[in-house]
Image (cartoon, rainbow, N blue to C red; front, top):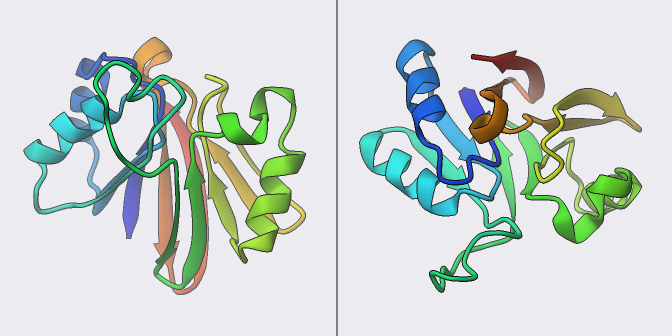
Length: 155
């Protein structure tokens, strides 16, 4: 399964719409700070798999209710998804890696820093797609046969 991974849209849906118009994909993951944006996109693609979590800027004014963290098994890969603010990712990823390892995740997808990253540490894929709202950054993650690969992209 091929997922388009977004984070930090901050009310700017145009970049996501443009990306989704040119990519082939099976699902969409939005990692917060744009929970309502993700909901808008979700209504445009009701036949696609969709996962979204709340970020630190979501819900304060709108009273949004949702999960701040999700664990999912996608094509045999256990994936932890969160915005990252609760793990102090602006200061490093050690806390996030520890949590992912404790939950048995092979991949952890997060946002918050507005800086993209795609690397494997301690056997866990760390993927932050960057900021789609600020710089048109996103990631493509492919899950097949118990394995995951990812690539960072930009509009």
